[in-house]
Length: 385
Image (cartoon, rainbow, N blue to C red; front, side, top):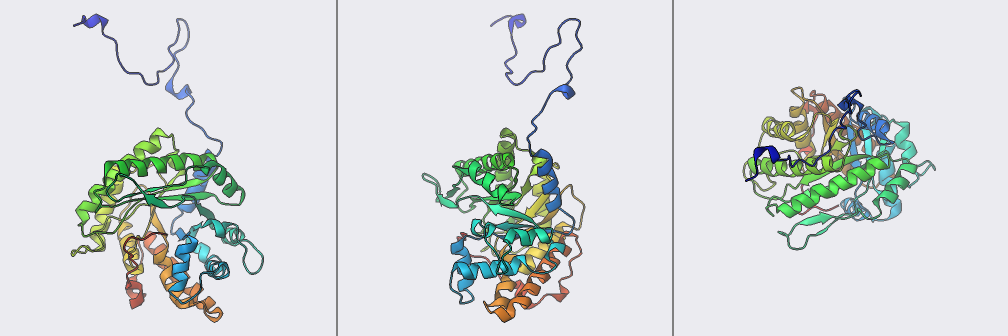
């Protein structure tokens, strides 16, 4: 064994500059930390989206998935019909009172309305920040437990730069974790790393990244199993976000609520879901993150709103809000039915759901005015979009 006096520290991380004799020591405050060209804009955009009483309208379904929505009301999946439906959504009068951001599919970002304005213009008129889905979807992961990985990093920097020019100011990337699949450690790490690389690239282009590792509802597991897996994926995700020098003040999260599996025989009350979900956030999410925009994940319109309302009954360090797709659009589609004479009524249906979730974000939601249709389940086993 070497004498104690010859041992040297093995730490190889960054060191502070050492002051030479007669010079003033260099303080930590004088060191330059990461500062990107869009940092101030990213922070401002994230804060705008995370405004009190507001959340995100997720209308970024792929053309194939949008086609399934249209087929449910006996409408053909054509670009004209997709444009008509999405125009209905972005032109609902007063939507900006409750919605601060809208996630678009690429087709919609570059699409015009029937009056010649762009979808982006219509959103901006209402003070709604346009966003864009940038992942390329899920594909099977080899040598895993029947799990998936998300593709789309190749060419992402070029695409995000073009999306910024087209008016998008935030982005979304969705990875998924399956509880019945284990999940495997390789799937957890691949999901987390992909999200972190995407987030860094998006910020470099001026887009606030929504980070979404969705814990799928599929399965018979109880709420404790969901919490365990959610803690695991968020631990990995924030590790890789930090490794990739992502600016936490310039991101938004889109987590799943901590609920039992869709086929679990034991359902939980909103107060229990809120307690478990807030416990997850407090254990894993830095307070520097401005907004937690929950996905509905197949919950009914009523269930997702009740759970969000329960979470906002107590103070927390974040803006706890919503980024719903089916839980905002289910009633809209049923009201519209593809008929021009139903457009105004469908817009009112969207405003009703948006206001309900706005109230829930403020902890002031009153479910007494809801119809029985709001409790209709929207879960789809093995959902893809």
